Image: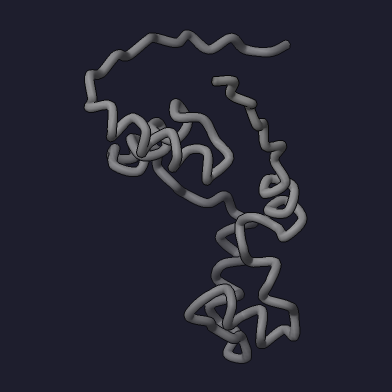
Length: 113
């Protein structure tokens, strides 16, 4: 059974230029303006959930803390290089996706004088 989430509408007044900026930003992240704004709001709200791991997770974390042969990395690309993996897959958009979006159909209109 699927739970139905109650939703509420929020309306804000912003300059047209900022709305266009939000629209472009959302499109570049392949999301909606609604999801983009909600994710930004969630990042700035205080978390009210306690994050206490269960026994199995706590034991696993304690074990990993005791191990001395683990490697640490400053960035995902550093880890990928260490593992011998290509760093090209770290980009948000694949090359196939960027080629597809760059081949948009151009509509030309003839103007009669």
